[in-house]
Length: 202
Image 1 (tube, rainbow, N blue to C red):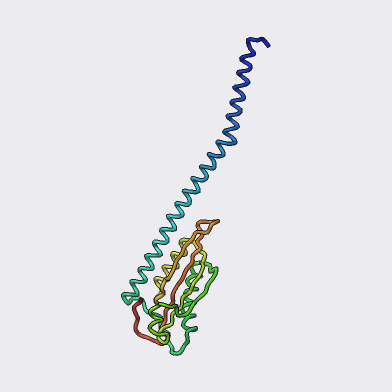
Image 2: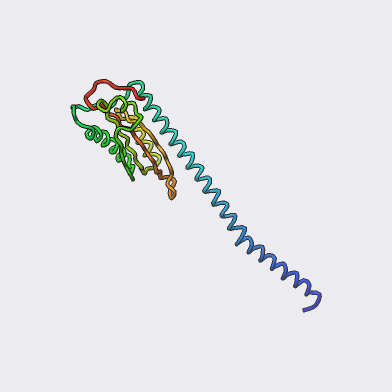
């Protein structure tokens, strides 16, 4: 090769090496980082959207809770009253308990865990006398979607007898944000004997 072409050959080799180096840097460093950044931005956007939906659902539930409280305070909601006397707390409990379970099932809500406690401390009905009122907290962990949970709260709102919503703690399922894991606590009230009047809540 002539000496006059050697310097151009070296420049050409250097240029090709630089191009290859730039290409490899782009393919193995810059592009993966850009793709990862884009993926993270998409995930953030999805999470923000899901958070807004979750907050909207929570707001609707809080509004329904307020409506139920308003109905109770205005006398529109009655405390459950048995048809017969001397039914016992278990019978009073299971009458309303079965209605709650049916509302959950009809809205395709799955129950993971459930427990209940009679006569919770601090409740004004309990303080008024256990011979007059039966009170029971039902605590559940349930699995649902946004729509079905909202429908269930609506059913509680429409239920003719007073059910107090103590707690609704909603968390999206880690693997599928459209699925909700909800800690739900309801307080059931009933007269122990047949009644024709209702009582305001505390």
